[in-house]
Length: 268
Ligand SMILES: NC(=O)c1ccc[n+]([C@@H]2O[C@H](COP(=O)([O-])OP(=O)(O)OC[C@H]3O[C@@H](n4cnc5c(N)ncnc54)[C@H](OP(=O)(O)O)[C@@H]3O)[C@@H](O)[C@H]2O)c1
Image (tube, rainbow, N blue to C red; front, side):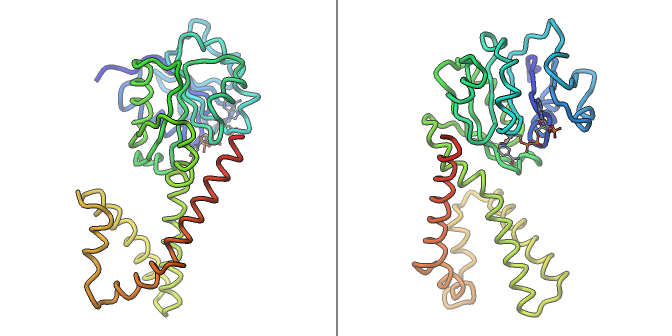
């Protein structure tokens, strides 16, 4: 695979560091990370320079992609200095809730801009990222963005930026829903009198194993569910409770609607 072109990463925290580690595997030519934290210095290597602020960027540096991975609340302060790269680079913003228009306004320039919404399994390269490319992004820039985002997992493109609100609600928050399910399985096991160590191991491995089975199978989740559900058996009895009209389906729909609405409010 060809080496990646020169990259500028603004914010080398959890998500930025996860992406950088994936890019290293793909073959970096040159990258600069801007991050004021002492911890970010650990990201430095022969091909990766880490600087505390944009004022210390090498003068000859002309990145082909600028990845914005600071917290959304830092954007107004952090972004304007990078407007000078707007003519040459594709910008990729992973900042939650910042629309393409908002990022352009904060930069004070309208670059070729990709807005992406990853999720936390990115830390183990099992993330899911939905991305939207604005009209200024060329096919070659979109291909570069796809390659950079694929470093942390699967990537899907949406053609309507508004789709990122339900995406935020479902895949962005999704790991939290799965972790809540894991907590509930553990708590219920304890309530049924099982030993704490057994309850914890059983809940964790059931979720881990189910995810691995889903990953290894070509069947839909619904088919895998049916395969565990013997007629007249124990799982069927539990699912009858969980799938009742006022139980999981209705609650889950309301939860996702609430999160989608909140994402719209934050983007406004
Ligand atoms: N984590 C997720 O699940 C997730 C999911 C989707 C989207 N995102 C988005 O990803 C972005 C990064 O999230 P994260 O979890 O990686 O946050 P994080 O761990 O806090 O990383 C942000 C980094 O940016 C640094 N920073 C602060 N001000 C800066 C500046 N002016 N210039 C350059 N760097 C600066 C921070 O340093 P200090 O610690 O010293 O402030 C920190 O190292 C956010 O916008 C978030 O919305 C995250």
